[in-house]
Length: 121
Ligand SMILES: Cc1cc2nc3c(=O)[nH]c(=O)nc-3n(C[C@H](O)[C@H](O)[C@H](O)COP(=O)(O)OP(=O)(O)OC[C@H]3O[C@@H](n4cnc5c(N)ncnc54)[C@H](O)[C@@H]3O)c2cc1C
Figure 1: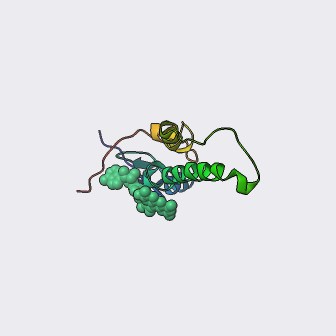
Figure 2: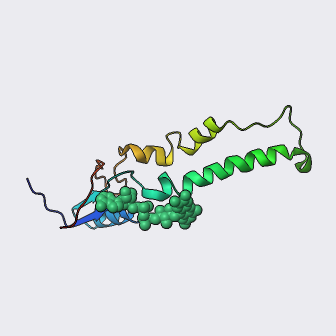
Figure 3: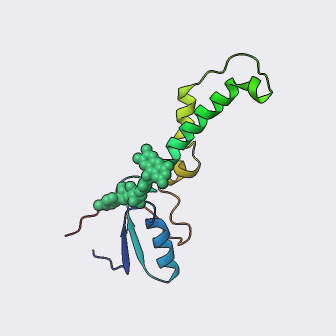
């Protein structure tokens, strides 16, 4: 069974979801195809996960320098990498939720059902 769309967007990285929402708002029938993780590299494996790791490292670093910052704490500061990783993996917040593919495109109200790999013939 073939379906007709006004626009087909391949990939849900930096611009795909925003473009799909914009086109849908203009009344176009839009299909969006994502082969792996909704949100693409930045929110799933790039910018955001790496910055959460950096922020955990920074928090531990600052905690160890309490004297300099004018506070004391009992005991040593130890890093639990399992918990750091859990935090990095989203804990169900921003990209954790996107990964499930259940959120749809908020601005368009269109459901999103991953995964799918597009081929141009
Ligand atoms: C470790 C790391 C840290 C980073 N940190 C930063 C940072 O701090 N600041 C910054 O500005 N940038 C950062 N980047 C770069 C940033 O993540 C990328 O520039 C950005 O995500 C690229 O966006 P994009 O939409 O072009 O591609 P992507 O986010 O990769 O999106 C492309 C999407 O299209 C899908 N796709 C591709 N082909 C098909 C197909 N044929 N069918 C179906 N789906 C398909 C892919 O699965 C993917 O989801 C980082 C990257 C990495 C790896």
